[in-house]
Length: 276
Image 1 (tube, rainbow, N blue to C red):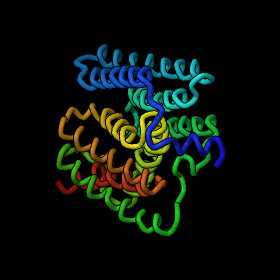
Image 2: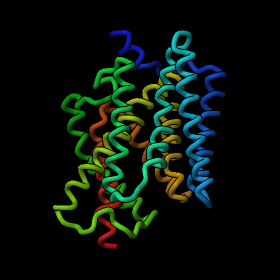
Image 3: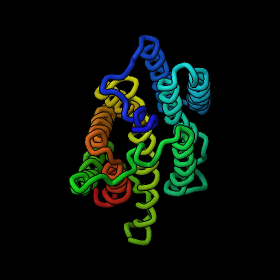
């Protein structure tokens, strides 16, 4: 096993230190605060404040990671990947939704996220298999199809919770559905799963341990959905994040959850609004 592989695999119980926990709790709390401010803003100024906090958090995390790059390499890399969720929010808040359609807007913000995730993996010398972009053996391959299809059920459940009334496409035709589904697969499937389950999850396991790392990434994933202003949805998304993370831990592959995540949003925003 090479040095990078050993670091990637990480111990089942991470080398967590008191100062690590304090830093993680502080950064996570600031992230949640910024998400809440932006979500419940009553005027543009408050929404801007939420984005300013995310910008400051992004640069603080990267600066902290740089300071520890020689003395505490494991925690430095954890902090570096922790900077990706603030980047997601900065891109979504700073990119104007008009004159674009929702699908076009989604594509615009997803491409820089993919580039950021790929750059982070490259700088850390991680191979595709190190971020779980591998198919695995025959047993893992057999599991990928039901995992992927579970996304349809997850999308239906979240539809019952959120009940979105406006579909993201003008008509339920193949001409509109297929391109939109591909873009959603890239944005919410590939980009988000690469960031959360491919990069942040293994680094969280390395620092916190297997189960605490899974719980942390599930909380972080749920916090990204504060903007829906639904406590039930936050609990639901936490459960989905835990399920996706557990699947990745067991299979060492992202492909099932990539398709599950994409199919969930296809059902939620492209198909079900036309029928209910």
